Image (cartoon, rainbow, N blue to C red):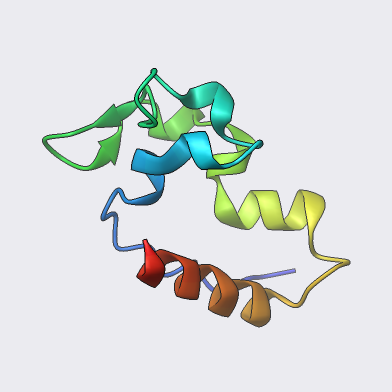
Length: 84
């Protein structure tokens, strides 16, 4: 299945709130921010080997493709991004 790319603008807001989700809490450096988040660039220091939960398309394929359509999943996540 080919998915359209997730429309991430690399703002880093989700990386600054890893403590709010059970799936990402293990990444918390102690202040809610991902231990791999680079403040100066808003990018991931381990992008090429980041955990599955951080790879939106791959996480969707592995866990959610039988639960929700991709376009609905993207719409839901974009709405969450906007609230952050």
